[in-house]
Image 1: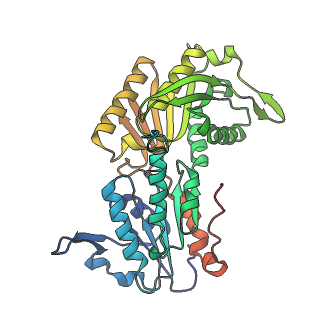
Image 2: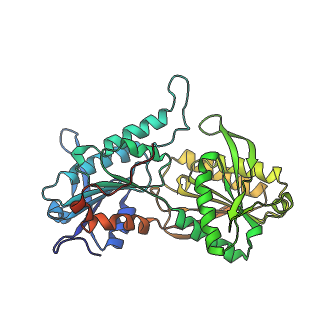
Image 3: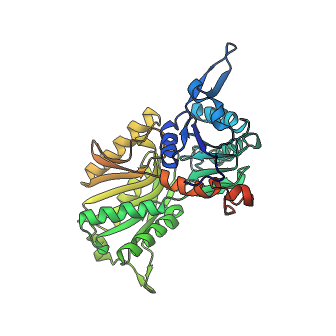
Length: 384
């Protein structure tokens, strides 16, 4: 990979919890991965620095990439320490932040009249703190942010990588393996907010198979952080070769595969309620396979033990009661997620796809010198 003028190279560092993603990124970029050392001074102050075998001279004259995790409080603190350490090393050419899973960006938890949108507020604060000028960031890369408007609060250029192409690839592989035609499967958006994303995925699949692909979205109302209620389901008309397309009620009853798509799965409640409602309302008596697809699979990574056990139990119980062959598909973004490939779980199968190549593609232009020559051209402006 061309990284600019002769002699320039790339050093990748990681905060706590992001070591695997950082190593994978370094491999794709053929870059140096620098181990970080953490500890306490005698007065109890925490520190983060390069280990003795990976001393800071690796950063002199180099492009630095800091891969961070923000899934819990310890990871966030370490991310801030690591960004500050790397960003203030002498002689670095550029400094990029890569955060595959941005935590604390959900606005649907702990809402009340006293503290509305508490989680969104925490996401805004997090974005502002991670990208403070003191970190000397050239740009920041995120993957499928739950709320893309958070980028408006960043203090450096940002890019939100979308995994639509990977979702399309996974769906094509699945329907090919099952030998299904366009009338045998449909895509499901668990709420109105995810319907645009699912529509884009449906368009991508439709272009690949040269046939119309149907979708359904549900009207979801959140009761609290873990409970949702579905009140209706809508099957929008889809455009194909200038004509409107929609599954008839009889075709809906005969579906063999339903694929739910969203950006993340935490407790699994939204998927389960949406699937249950659509299956009952459309009287799907031939449905054999159910797929929950999301970029960030929290129950499959280093989330709290309580969340992991509760989410997996709910998902397993749903697939068993619905008598479906269950499959979870997601990316390797959340800390602790299993390696890329197929995995067997009790009650369902798991498939992990690789988002690192998409991140690499976004980093290539600025690393090759375009950003340093043209200024902050790293990002399009976030939507208001």
